[in-house]
Amino acid sequence: MNPEQKPTVKQVFGMMRQMMGSVPSAIEKAVAVDEGLLYEHLRSRGYAMPAEGALDEETRTLIYLASALAASSKACIQAMANKAKMQGIAPEKVLETVRIVRFALATKVVGDSEPVFEAMAPENK
Image 1 (tube, rainbow, N blue to C red):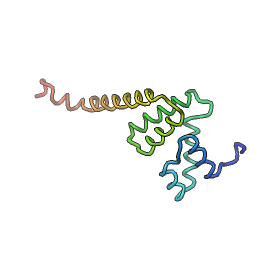
Image 2: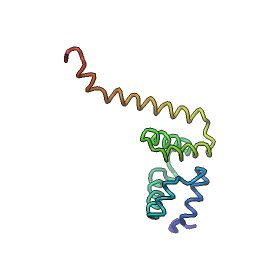
Image 3: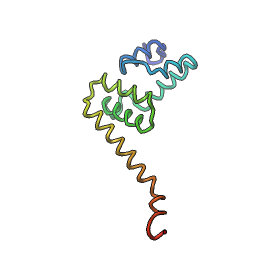
Image 4: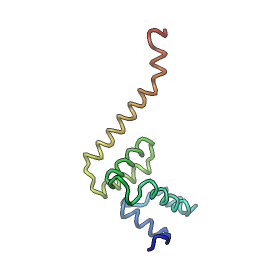
């Protein structure tokens, strides 16, 4: 397939199965309604993760997993968990990623609470 030739939906789904073990059900349902969404998704993936990018695939997967966890995107969390398994990423790395996200979200709550702390400060009572 040359670079100008658009892959078929079947080919894209085959690539997804090879990379992640399955096609996310949201993608399958989206294609049934708007096939163009799949091609826009592929274009966006190429922009975010170019073939000659600075990061290796393992790092990309862990960053994507972290982002999905932080955004509470169940479909992406499942897809990246599957991809991490398919890539053979060490469980310790995946768990450390989860712990980092947990810490970042806990830190966000503390940071977001600044107005509460300010209002409760002894000098403001």
